[in-house]
Length: 255
Ligand code: T3D
Image (cartoon, rainbow, N blue to C red; front, side):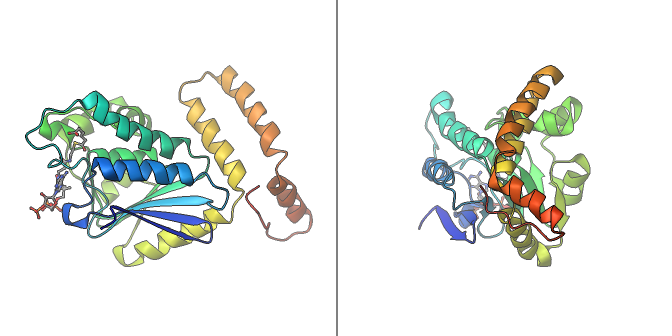
């Protein structure tokens, strides 16, 4: 059985974590496949990526049975996570985490590294790490406090409580919550909308917002001017302005 399913349609690449018997617990093989798929997603035919889980949940984090009885080098093992997190964060196009059921441990870390999180109303989010005596990893220490602030991040990381979808929404951990029965349709609709957008510009927006996390206002003013030079020369910018003049919706090509 393939541990990662890939499906590409109309500019939307859907990556499905596929170990439903363990709520898609992450194995080394799965992380390597995911990293490879994210590198391939840089191809211009891909305009948006959706990351989801097969079966009844999104992802339960590291497979706690993979290294049963072994003493592993976390430093080495976490390189596999690093490659995936950098792949998600560095991909210059929108990445949506479609979260239904559980998102736990490193599964939540991967969701946080995506650009948008759409939760089904049955979603349950938990940091989970502290319950097994580990600190958050796979980028959670970076993303979580930036999304919810230090105090809440500390609480979530230390207590590892299970958050329902609406609680996650109130904290800003997910962008929207959709009833279970409308979830797949809403994810497809949003992905479809983004796949029709000015992809190159979306990539530059992602780059700018990510850079801002560690930059001063002066640095950002400089950097956004640089990126606007690039956005301003895209065909999609020309098309957007032309469409405005002609009072019609733009037809973006992603270049
Ligand atoms: O160690 C390292 O490599 C370092 C890196 C660590 C990164 C991490 O991600 S640490 C955190 C790891 N994840 C967890 O601790 C979460 C463990 N799982 C849970 O808390 C719960 O299973 C869930 C909240 C995710 C879902 O609960 P529920 O009640 O819906 O399902 P369940 O019955 O607990 O699980 C269903 C099956 O999936 C079950 O298998 P079984 O008994 O039917 O054969 C369960 O053992 C399996 N499963 C769930 N999570 C994992 C898992 N198997 C392996 N690894 C898992 N993480």
